[in-house]
Image (cartoon, rainbow, N blue to C red):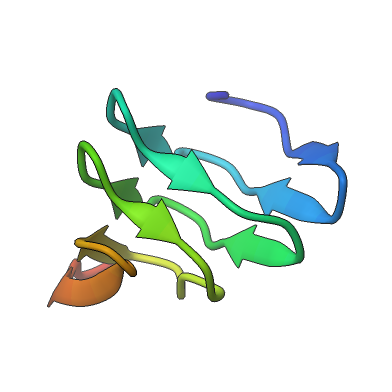
Amino acid sequence: LRDNVVQNRNIVIEEGVWIASGAIILGNVNIGRHSVVMAGSIVTKDVPSFSVVAGTPAKIVRNLKAE
């Protein structure tokens, strides 16, 4: 997913996103640029750009600075 925006069933995964194994992304969600979804997380809401999310449901655990 490096150079493309992937869109399917109202899920938008923007450029530079990392999704770890076992993560589940539910419909109507936008994963912002250069964000990280940690292993086993369940994403139910939008993830802002440059964020790390984890948990069930996924919550922001860290903000990444744009370089």
